[in-house]
Image (cartoon, rainbow over all chains, first blue to last red; front, side, top):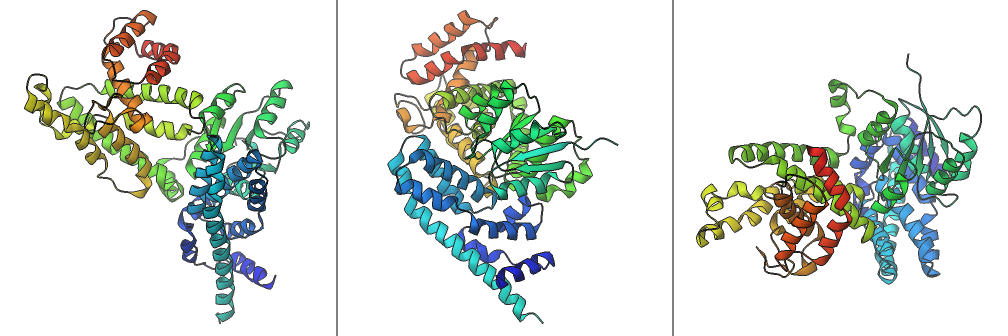
Length: 142
Length: 348
């Protein structure tokens, strides 16, 4: 909670943030910031929101239950979400999964979950590390 | 002072709502709701004064099409722009029944969003100087692709003019490719994105650009000289190479489909085409459609009238060359018959 508040102070204070750290998770922050009209603070807040988003858990549950209709809905939502946050790797994977569901290739769509899981976990881990790094830099600042 | 229009953003994703709000809030007053029920509740309120709606198609609680249905049944007429991660041909077709104003795709492109909403409310385009200032906010992909297409077209049109070739043929091939691929999307591949079809049809304009790299004598003598014909056939590979000179990541999709059409528009369904003798579905659907569009236009455009009789005549002429195109392509053309005939009529 303290970490979160510090990040928000950083955002509100308009302190430039280093987003390059996010690139290792297949995220292209420069493209996202263009979409956010140059508002880095808003982008940072939306990355925080992504960590709270429940669509991925819902997708996993739908896949476990072999409910392809629900899985398609969640995958489709995640496609849009990841596209808007310029999470390119995840966007590609969800795009592929949606295409496979639409083509009734459910087994192939389910098989993509392994890659999706890896990329999603990496994205979440990287965003958390990035948030931590932002706060650490704050602490070290004079 | 012009009154400020009030827009309602309907999307279950808070992130997507915030992005749209951020893009539009300098020019419009914004309201947000997260599902279709709340949207209907708001727009039917007496004093809501909603002038337009950006409506997400896929929402867990009353989706976009259900909202449109209720609006249609209750005669609620406000401009609606559908928001989706997939502007598939099927969605476009469904939306057309409700008189939807336009589509906005996710991920959002700032200038596209502003332009599409501005067009509905007659908001003037930003003057050139302002546009330069906001250029950084335009999607890099769209901006660079359009710039590349514009430069390529300028060079290619000069060549066509000097070589006494007809640029109108290229325009017609482009439009025919679009008509046929939209129908293909509706009947065969609902996931085919309408925005991808737009890019593919723009790319079809350049299908013969490889002729720029072939001596004019070889083109002129290809039917009487085997060696000239061999040189002429290299225009396919040459076209692919010319288009691929742009290796920008932003233009990747355009370059991919355009070079593919340049390379493979002379392939035949029976595998006896060139340069690679691709058989059947080994060739891409857009290259097959582009090749068909080019062959069709060469005969149909010269007819004195554009009607069913002339259309059938051309199809029969093409079918006479057995194995050139698949039966699916002919079926596709038959389903687009009225649209194609009307398109040619509109050119007169």
